[in-house]
Length: 108
Image (tube, rainbow, N blue to C red; front, side):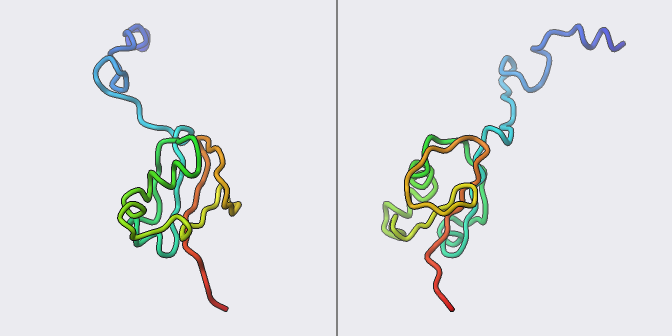
């Protein structure tokens, strides 16, 4: 019986584009995005997985687009880290990266 199953053409499988289904995104195709502080309130989530984008600033604009446009948030208020390294510069991203967005912290 195993030979008969193996002999079926690939288009019988559920995850093929031939039948209108597309394979799920694997972890290697997405960027894990974490939110802390005020960013949780703005986005409404603590974390998301998004399709890999080319740069950090492009991801920031994608995630916070509405809040940046309507004035609820300014780009200088958004702090960023890539793979647990805080950065202020734009940099290329690749699938599998972990990006965190957080607000300015204060305290003692």
